[in-house]
Image (cartoon, rainbow, N blue to C red; front, side):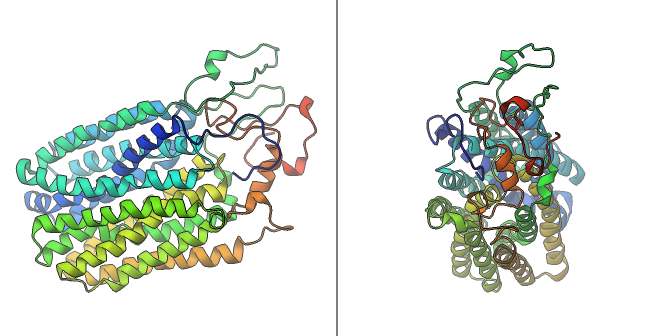
Length: 496
């Protein structure tokens, strides 16, 4: 999105095999977001066996989430180099191996390295490629597709939390980790679904000697960067860091950092908070299921709402509203101790949390455009990893020191509400108008200042993922014979 001028070739199919890709993305998103939170049901057993405090065991989920986010640039590079399908297959094996090895751990450090690092890396190698492939199959229906895919998180959270409690009661935490490791092998099946979208086929190109390249190489699955011949063509870098200069990206990155400091803290602490309040273990685990049930409805509904013609250009404000609602829910529920009050908190939290989950990646793609989305997503996830490493462990340490959960809800709610306020104010003040002239279609939904220049270069080229079956091929500058180029319109990040 954001490209102007005529297009060649068909756009994303918005259906067909894309529905299978959407189903696989649904499963991957469920594992990526639901699994680190569902593991929290094992924390008390880990504290008892290892003689550790809550902050020590909370590092397992935090490291898993940090690996999920922090390896974003690595995942972007691997996807660009090898394609989505092989990266996801390897990621599924790593995620499963991490939990299986964690079942044999005898020290907390071994848990950090297996369940935290290895499983988190495997989930990361599945999560980001699935989002990239979803963007290649959907354009007109992309808000709805993102909402449906994001619904995987609450579905799996509502299922994995009671499942983990049952596994803990019948097999202990070691048997539970072993069985959950086998469950993660489903990520490999999802990776096998990720075939590149159909296209008219690659255009023949000639190198400096006039020989056509190997056609079989051009048809390899998944995004791939090709070597640039000396005839005036260029290639996109494996990781386009020039997106950091985009004002829309900078606003989004700061918002996500503030959001990640507090967004996941209530969900991770909720089960143990309820147990400390005297709620039976099975009912405490069911609280996460309530969050999941509400979230299941909220995400697709919010995705469909964001896809409306009148609301889609203002999706950034809708995202900021969801963040403020989530933060206010935490603040107003800090004193909830009875089971009825906790259920009311879960309903309100699930609604606002679902809105945030449904909109976050749609806002990023609207800000930077589809061609730069893989690089932007990797960099945002890296920044979010830092916040995740700070948030939940710090909250756990405060709980150990103060023996009071109330301040945690106040702190987390303030951080998320501040992220929403910053997003709304910065969007209104900094991104409402481009620097020069009236707004263009490429900058309508919060796109950055460089998007107009990028659209000018690509005006005679098909968008990423439509012309060639590889999906995320390099954006190539036309050779001198195809028409003049304006020097001042050259896209940042492309070598002339």
